Length: 548
Image 1 (cartoon, rainbow, N blue to C red):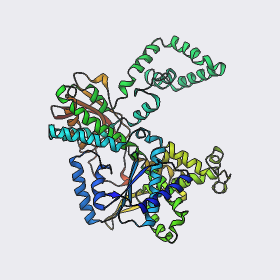
Image 2: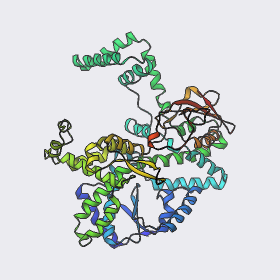
Image 3: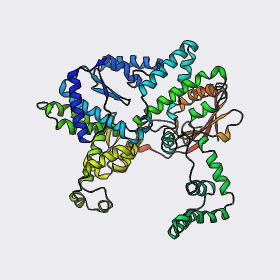
Image 4: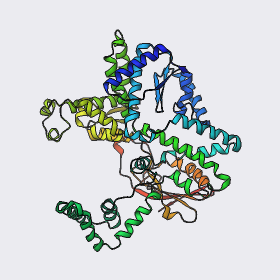
């Protein structure tokens, strides 16, 4: 691995000038390295961070990638990481014209890292420097504690997808000292007190909203005072509940790893405190990579949009238009079955630009029902670039898809949801067009996004040194085969029994969910499932299960 030569660096600087003029923003300094396929194979398990701590799983991944490369040799074109300064890696087989295209792609990524709000927890420090310090810390502990260091890493990585990423962003926005900001009395009354504490009917809730709006219309300066004077008369206990909610707010915003670090008697014993530094390293690393996995489609689509736009207007690539067309088509082709984040992302950005240029992002356009009128609708507002820059800054993949993948988009690109069924005559599985409805296609995309389970600690049930975890069920069960090992690791870190409350499909003595024998079925055999709450308990390295 070595820095790019001066000739290639001049090409990169020329790309920077053109990209900056187009509106992209990135740091003045960047580092570019030329790497071989062997280097890329060794860096990939470490998420391309050369200074990341050593761990045996990385070695296993290297061996797996080497075997895969022998069977399916390929040349990755580039990789860029979100550091200060940004570091990018380029395959040593790339010709100059290809590097021009790749540089634009990389600059699109760096701009996304610097400007997207979901990356704001990574803006204030250089992760490569932090990772190097963490690597040295773990190496020192490994020389003292031996294999126990790897056990702690293993147990910590088992729950590193449960870090409180969104609460971390909230703390960055709302507080200077890292604590959760107090919930306002108005938010508490309408969002928690009426809905969760009193569980009032919808009609009464609407009446309270209207009463507050009436107070605002009469005198906005004293609206809250007048409104809550009646609340205190009707609910004398409201004030004490509100204060209690704010007192416990910081405690309840701790994710599982934070809670264990703070409250585990085992970890806070003098002889075990070294484990806390390892858990912190694993947690910080997970938080750093959370925004990248939550913005994969947007990030790749944004970079692909700009490498296409800027490359075609670059006079240095004359004579290589056909080469570019072939390479770009391979990157941005939309598969009929499956998902290509590059292809989907770039098409959505082009679609947004077109909508904004024609003034279609308006209520007036949404009220147009005729297909022909919708096609002819054009207010010539020319706000496309402004809109896609705004989208780049403020959305993640879920909001990106939920907002802009509509029926017009699905129809425009001839998209569909593919089903799979057995052909009884040929005895093979075949794919078929299951739906062309935008709602179905959007749901398929959203189901493919990264969405870890929402599991929190319930301090009120932590009696007798028990760590009680509650899985807030969102329609997808936990992977049962992982529960035992995860709870085993948590029991070791916590130093006591661990309980997990979750939801599973109701079982029957006849062998399968809902009384049906388990068997593979095609789309036509879908049936409604009955869910039940169950409690897993890990105590003395033994797992038990109880239906609640």
